[in-house]
Length: 397
Image (cartoon, rainbow, N blue to C red; front, side, top):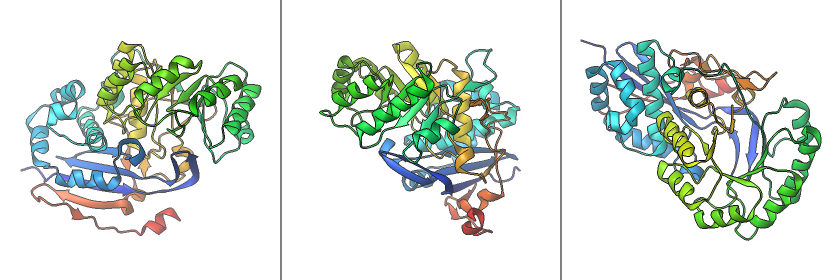
């Protein structure tokens, strides 16, 4: 008789060593859910990072969805099928097609990342090699550098190179943003693409003038300039602007991406694992972008803490034609991470390597324990409060 399966949920609100500011949110701590699913001696670790301003979800809403989800059918499916068969079906059919699980973007992301990790660990494979559609992948990829509102442009240029692609988080003053673009162009010349991310902060009336100002300053791209889902207005703006438009918050689902492509609303989409419902759904979005002639960025949620970082990198290496790849700044935000090993970035070259595996190649460490909030044991229909052995204050001190 196998040991009962155990699911442990962590809500990690880890203070950030440095904050991150943009028009939609000032962030000073992580807000991720980790799910550790242990079945028959093997554990898989998943993560989601819900953001209300992106998908309308929160850690509380995802936790409630998870509590309402019957786990036994999922466990039965795990035990009844060969891991290789399940892994193949999960990659081809996604979480709903394989396990029948419905739910919001972040619940599906949380479960899918945990199940991919568990199945790959059973087979001794890395998630990255399972996600790859071709045999040859690069050894490393260059990553973007992001200038948020907490950092001066001169300090950014002095300390954050080398530069492959620069994203500037817009301020409330277009003159300031244009000056930032000019300062970057004066230092870097024309060799590095520059994008300004407005995070839905401009009105339809403001946007044409803002785009002209930024184009004259030397920008190449603008990200999410208008309110989420403003398809007709975005198409009109794109038709009149010399800047190319990337959409992020507007494109959470495949249906959103199809709408964006059909309406001519953008030149590129920002693909993020949590926002798009997990690695499989994100990969489908990349494939749709390719079919419809859109460029794509492999992006991150600010303050990812573990499996999401690895999943984003696995996706980037599986689909190496991205316009650019974001690595996040977990190495700067979290000097004492809650997973081991900490996902590395080579800051001398600003490049990343594929996650090592097996699975995502990560495990929660002792610093994760204080963030455990609930545990469910197979056979018990209810989630029970997790016992904390260390106070949170001791971990963040």
